[in-house]
Length: 154
Image (cartoon, rainbow, N blue to C red):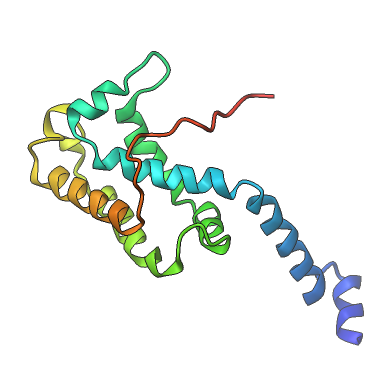
């Protein structure tokens, strides 16, 4: 009781206040869990595609090569990534394998971040095979990039 009074007096949160705030924080993220799940799956789908598959996705508002680089980072932001597991959208037994996949993609040398290498360079081939393997394990049947979620500016 004295500890709580001292903490409040000097601006420190009590354990119960911290827990409540953390739960509210989680609830805010939980509302968007399906969006984070979609991002994670989409990022893996992009890495599973061949050059010609990726080229079919090109539109005035969508650059699949840019998305390869950026969506993986967004999908693996810790708070988004953990929300997917906390909400049971992906079994936590896949956490390590997914994190290893992210590290694999981050290991792509900058000199092969080019369309011409996607189908022929061993690194890209290895990553594509790994992405396909992960999608199989996650039982993702539809391998089409989903643009169901569109972010609108307010």
